[in-house]
Image (cartoon, rainbow, N blue to C red):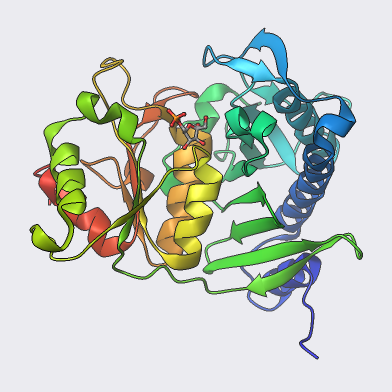
Length: 335
Ligand code: P6P
């Protein structure tokens, strides 16, 4: 009988045995996990819950919100504001930061999240997910402001996602490798299924939205053309392609069997560095990938080294199997 290790036990051991995480961070992560369970329940209801479809509102990104985007955001806010572990939160769905109300004690952590990533897939029953990132509020800064969030991803103290697919699986790092927990709905708890996750250094699988090919920069075009040329081309091997249009699902596949994910800058909106958001999509995913032995760059530099200037800053993303990411980055003339 394989001993079942719950998320709670894993976090207690990370706190007590390895000294990796203080009690307040353990509490934060347990509350985020409970929020993901609630979101999973809402997502699983689908049509039966009468909460699919558009909310007829736009978020700060100018994207039409789904009802579940708003519900997931509210679940995370309400679950995390009272515990005394947070100073403030930031979300893809909110223009500005949410400061913990005065009626609750303020903590030292900053929580950022994309409450429901991939929401264009909600109505067609394709995997979606919640992405989260945790920073510490800078020492000595009175109160809390947006500027406190503008730290490079290398400063994260915890990061993860929960993918709502055939299984509901929480994937987490606190800097001691990557661990995966699947939701045991009979017990109502997340159970460890894998730890010390490792991404293969090489891959034959790339993920990119091919419909944007005519808008890409030359280095990305070169890379994808070489993959498409297969055995007869310069790579000497055939490649497979995947694109779920849910970053959580694509990254989960890469953490599970390797691969490379690209959402590069393109000419459609040249003033934007990319489509994906740095603080609550690229940074948490990049830390997870690096903790699993992979790499993550924007074509020019390590994503985790980027110093943010805006809360909802966008970035070009190339992440996954280390050797493949290094090859693509070298094509940008920066390795
Ligand atoms: P496209 C979802 O909206 C998202 O932010 C990521 O989860 C996903 O990888 C990407 O956008 C999909 O973008 O342009 O292919 O629909």
